[in-house]
Image (cartoon, rainbow over all chains, first blue to last red):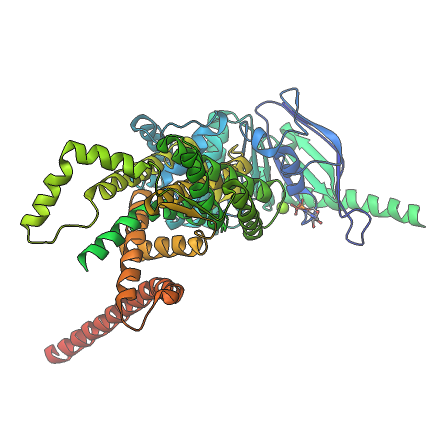
Length: 264
Length: 331
Ligand SMILES: Nc1ncnc2c1ncn2[C@@H]1O[C@H](COP(=O)(O)OP(=O)(O)O)[C@@H](O)[C@H]1O
Ligand SMILES: [Mg+2]
């Protein structure tokens, strides 16, 4: 489904600010697989998402989606089959446009946009039904400007917009991190629901280890631009936060020792 | 007095098309596009040269608008593909157009006084049909002196401007139009929804300048000449119309906003005409009048809002006080 092959990207190469954001990353996702991604700040999680979405082009390496090489396909051309939700609740919607207009824009993501009305009676009914499934009462506010919604409501709408056209891949980048705990909980629930409902192949970055353990069928941990830990199946079910931290220190410790050996 | 007011409304309606173009770039795309001063002349000049060359006025007008569309597209390309700052891209295109317009026109002024223009054509049809006499009789019977012009320019321009408005309203609600609006609102988001934002900006600025050039082509034919300097300050007039219109008539939806822009263009012309009738002001003061008008339109709504807010708070306070007193009495 999604395949990253030996992907590397370095920012500001040859300057004091040089940053190896991804180092020879290999990753393969099965169709319908739900993968959570954890790792410390600057580990390269967002960079990984950006390479998949096409907002960054890697220095070397290959990205294939459905056996199609997409590395040089610009972001807007990939977006037809990739749904995305950003961390910032303001980022995923157009504030000065109405709820139904925002949904209309998401609806035409996998089609060629034409000179026909984006909101018709029939489509409005469909948008209303989708909104209804969020249980936030947004279905009664189709003509409200999105800028008037709360952060949680906007994020729920972004999530709906990213998913209801059933994209081949869903990318979630800490999409609950900017919300208060109860809202984050709600968005997490909705996420689990829609991913299941549409059987979406999903990569979800999260800061919250518990969330990473509770959701999904597979977990990967990143550090310094590399995937250092990858568990799935039963092994993941039995994982605890303590296991995870121990694992992190074990792997990092080893690495530090080997770094020392090289440097020494 | 009435005649000059009528003239003001009339030219306001023609300039409204230009203001709609400015609305599209400034308000919808959030693109401060200064190409306008140049593309307005491009429209007038191309239409003028074509008319003098014997082209039918309708085709000449459309050709002028198309030339403006191309100019706008180039500004869009400079910004999106050349990565040039929006303001600078517009300024560069504006000065480039000055020379291009001069080349196109071959001379600083192209006169259409002896040519058959869109307006003379319709006028002859209009007089022949007898409507003119009919309307003038009504006005005369109301006790008003005969209008110097005729009703025709006005009627035609109102219809044309409203048609453009309706088309624009419709376009901005289509799938493409929604993506265009989102490009101005949240580019990152609409790109993640598979819209080619560069292409949309290029087309959007193109359409904007197409409207500006259409307005220029009509203004040229209305006045009977095109001049390379007729576009100077046009962007400010366009912005003034947009801002005055929004302040007076609101901007809640697209349909209201575009109507407000047309209203703003008319109000602007009326105010300028009235101001110029004041004894100590002359035509050299027009720019100052424009600046004062725009400042007023920007500041006044906020002041009115603040005042309302203050009144509301005072009322609340008074209510609270009254309630407390009531409690004291009943105790
Ligand atoms: N556009 C960029 N230019 C320079 N450095 C960048 C850029 N994007 C990310 N980085 C750097 O690359 C590293 C990985 O960033 P990122 O993928 O955002 O980490 P995170 O795992 O926190 O999401 C960080 O050190 C970051 O500073
Ligand atoms: Mg990040």
